[in-house]
Image 1 (spheres, rainbow, N blue to C red):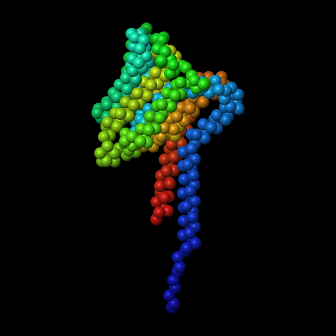
Image 2 (image 1 turned 90 degrees about the vertical axis):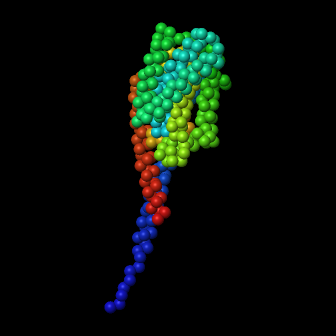
Image 3 (image 1 turned 60 degrees about the vertical axis):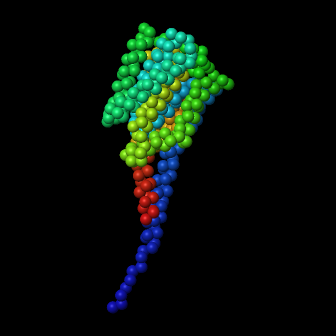
Amino acid sequence: MAETTREPDTMSGSSDGESRAEGGAAVDAALRLLSFGPMLILVLLIVVVSFLTPNFLKPVNIGNIMAQTAVIAIVAMGQQLVILTRGIDLSVGANLALATVMGGLVYKATDSATLVIMAMLASGSLVGFINGAVYVFGKLPHPFIITLATLSICKGLALELSINHTTMRGMPEAVTFLGETSRLGVPNSFFVVFGVALFVFVMARSMIWGWWTYAVGGNPKAAVEMGIPVNWVLVATYSFAGLCAGIGAVVLSGRTAASSPLYGNLLELDTIAAVIIGGASFLGGRGHLGHALVGAVMIGVIRNALNLLNVSVFYQMIAIGLIIVIAVEADVLRNHLEARARASQATRAQ
């Protein structure tokens, strides 16, 4: 009998390859859409709200949004770096409150704007340093523990140290200039946000600490093997988050011309929400400055729109909570799609 040979099914192989290529392209497109999702949602939100309330796009209201968002944006940038290292800081709100009280007490003793500002920045940075040092050198399993503890401690200290346990009126003119005054319709607090953002951008892109922070968040074990001082990177990150809380305290005290142990209530949730809504990941190692800023602006726009529409503050809290859930689910979907994309790329490479 004549021996028969079977030619390879090139059509089938070509069809499978095309199918895998199309699947990989679809996954890549979905990932790109998710990466631009927060910005697209923000733009869509602004368009919708501008139709619902014509007062929304008025210059005065835009200035109000910028002023109201400034504190969240500043503190969220510090929270962004903490989350980048797979951590979390629950103490930022109470830390800010304590910093304003320290500034208020210094103002009662002297009217030096320099000393008042330094007191608030030092107070915030010290609490951040304590968070990082206890977490790292105390070998705690998660920063949730120490930052939850310092939340309670800072709130108690703020209430105890404040005169009559309530709001203390008065701040130096230089402080009120930063928080309350505006130039050409743009709040001065916006320029503070810009300055902090510029520093974070330069640090993340050009300074070795920025690269180390991404490395620690991406793969802590590999970072140790590479010789990166992981412990001190974490301490520095939490210290910077505390510094951002101190800067936020300066802006808020300037805006209200007062200090209070009641300031910063639920600010930790706002900053975490801003970072996650903006598109950062709780898994660490991935995120950039834009995530915190977009998320902070989105929260500001939502609250301002709901205020203009006379929606109860309780429903505003519900809305923010629902948005956080959606953002976290988007992060889960993004991680799933990234895993599929890597598998698809590996298959196509073979």
